Length: 390
Image 1 (tube, rainbow, N blue to C red):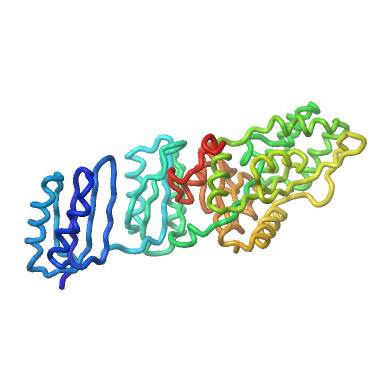
Image 2: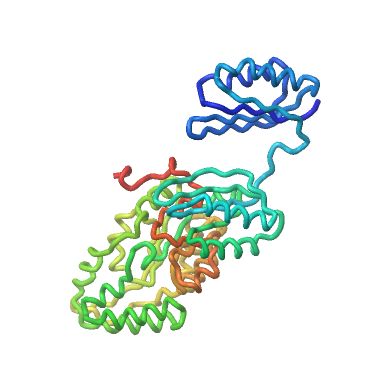
């Protein structure tokens, strides 16, 4: 017996697959592997088979005769190659727009590293066009990651590289930073606006996010400017929070897939409690503002949630859920998220500062949180849109 690849392509019509395998069966062909794909009304069906090589021409002619009524084109050839290799990695390419030139550049960069593209499938068209490339990486991946990160910046698209297989599908805990990640603004700056200290606080915040200031010192300095403000500004600020586009869709989809969802914030628990309940979050940790006689004292109670605390809380959540750290995801934007991002099984930098981008496993540089779903390889058919879940 000899191996061969037999393929039919043409308009997709009911009965094509049945007729194809009926002809193969009449020649006692043994199936080794099969792949069928439908795209824009056309079918491509390939079978990797064991057969008597002397019958290959007869089989090909039999298929042509039988499938001619379906307007199919047939090819049949002997093959010594394995039917398919097991892909080692997934490369997700995302853009708005995503052009053929973009994909050509990505494919060429992969070829430069002797990486073979085994399969390409579309994941979504909105909010970005996303393609999932199953690839085989023959050597170490770090150099490839760096090259694709540089190409991503050059082209203005997002490119994420992940290990393929069970590890990609087995993650079950995601932990978000809050300010400029889960929501579009910075809570401390919103509070400061009520005290006329917005510009002063914003400058300190920016320096802290770049890693130029110790986070705890900068937080206490900013909170001190709030002293004497009525506690009612907390509710006013909470009511004005704006979610990053795609957050509801992302959280609902992941929870539908069995994920635990957490938020760890250097902001304030009193502001986030309502949002956490609204989004049905499993875990929430943040700083606590001290209030006396209905006014903010300008101090926080207890230990400040800094970068080490964020990592500690991620580990606490994983332990509580019985989930290994390799099955966790962390998403953030600033230097305060570095420890959490590097500790997680998959660390994602979301429109992040350079210090975080350098250590993250993947980057999202478009303002849509649901790009994370594409990085995880979740196709649009499995996405629970926020408007569909109301």
